[in-house]
Image (cartoon, rainbow, N blue to C red; front, side, top):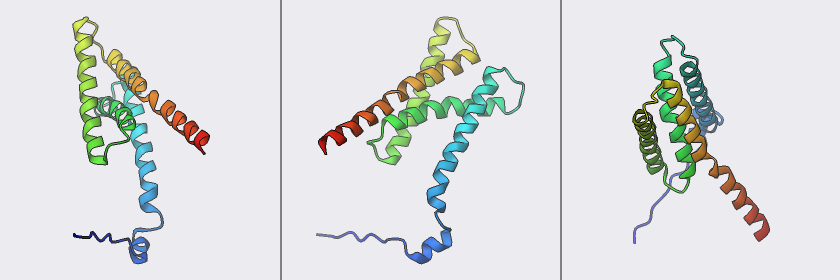
Length: 141
């Protein structure tokens, strides 16, 4: 039988990286991504002529459903979760576009609103499930 040795970070490694740098970077990146997505959605909804409108709106159209799907798939390993959430985001965007084209109601504003609403609907059961799990743990204790 083979044993696996796990090397833990030594105090020298943590001092070189700075105090809490790895822990503080994740919320900062999440906040920046949320800000970029929000700005992209607002630029699309206000029909702005900014050159950042296209890239930031595309970022919103991929990031909003991907984040919602990733939150719902918390049981998967991180790599599988990223792949599944990105694939789900592309599928959701394509379904919205195909549906809007099928009913002859294509518009950028409508697409952004539809993706935002569907992302919120995917995200809605997540806090409800967490609250239910927390309540079940309290009653079990």
